[in-house]
Length: 348
Image (cartoon, rainbow, N blue to C red; front, side):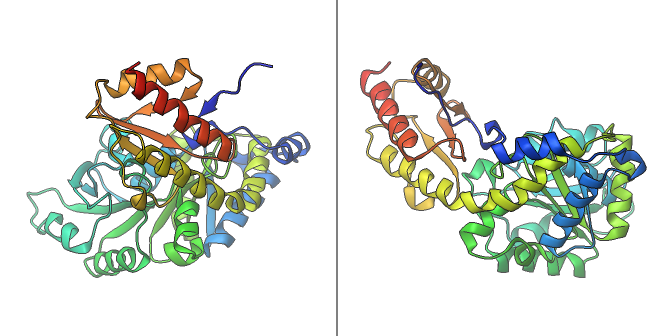
């Protein structure tokens, strides 16, 4: 048997579980554009129930979900306040500008976390000849800050103050279940004050494809129109929605193990000369570390790890990202640390 590949590039690489495959094979389907796919309807109802919302909408991806929510809550020419390292700005192909016709207004957070004190100065004065603030978007957990989590009281203050100013707040909650596990709170509690929430089924929850939008019925009705405009009418989508239903029930139970495995990685990396990382800052399943003091660039380093069957990703010339998920275990993480030590120890 060939040696196992340890894939730590992302939690998007997970394979559907046997239960998901059975559910997909047995899924009852209809035409979702006609609102007649019973499995999609059950998934949407269940997502809404879990988040304490009136309605849910199944979309093809997190990027589609975020863009749909932006388009449903802004007008062309407005601005969307978002964190400078956020996914919605850096990894979604400039869709808010290209397709929604709105501009990102970037605010740098501390380890990805914004506060009202930082957001308030970025809100535009209400003058007709300046672009107006149409929306605030937060990300929880924050991908490129290393999976950091918003304290609920900070997120709620932002929502409260934004609403006082007449501004809606969107949550890019791609990994919101990871945040909930870290906070030891349920997702309904930590997201209740947001006007819209997008979360991914295909990351830590382990489904093969898909994301969800949840919000009020009127909001989701607007989003359904936009989803169709973006090409997201998926017809007999119950085949994939069935896996999403399983992911909602079984996926969250494994996230604490992913967080524990991230600590195994972080603590092991901290012992390797040349690696810069503080394990105490690792909150969820994302580990970002710096190798700038070594002789290698991150791209060279990632290439050498790949040749040794450990797959990782370069963030920038000095930083590397590892993401734990259900398809890697503790021994995989320990082996990954050993391989990283070998590569850095040999300088190749």
